[in-house]
Image 1 (spheres, rainbow, N blue to C red):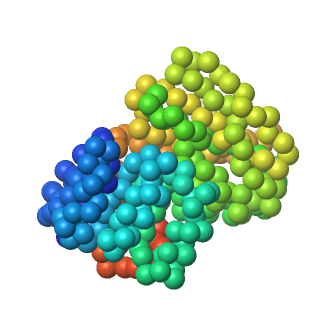
Image 2 (cartoon, rainbow, N blue to C red):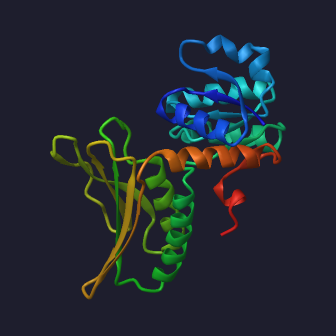
Image 3 (tube, rainbow, N blue to C red):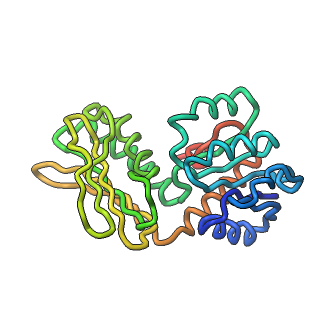
Length: 251
């Protein structure tokens, strides 16, 4: 399979290594300093482009790839609120293909399935309140994480007593704790922690007067995210439309 990389930071370089180890060819690498390569024959020859960039760049990158009829796998977050409807229409009516996920880790996909199952059970036990915490490295500027938001939305869809997710506390790299919001009844608070070089930890806690249940996914490195992105590219090469993890994994 011919792969183009859009974004060549730590994730892009790790994706390159894994793609090559699985026998794929990297035909184009586009970063901030060579945007003109979107117009190259090499980029247009790609079966799939894997895109990991900043939220403000992602949508424009999709448009440039779609203009060359190149399918896109993307882990960029933050664009859906402003451009979700447009991208959805391009993929459902315009013949384009985007595989999007807030997290490509296979472990997170399994964790997400457990999260949905547990939330369905907990809908029948209102004595348990639920709260979330996500921890990431100090270089991550946005909060909460895209994965945290996805997990929270899965809970809100299934718990009648929760209407929306909201910001909770932010623990900054120096240990300072900022109360960003006082959750109201019906809110699911997401607490954020920025610490060291943590690849990503997500914990969901159900607490009652009698006991507490916590489920946690703790990433050891970015390798799981990179492998998942390459697996998604392999899947996307043979599928069309607006795709996500639930299409690739049937659990």
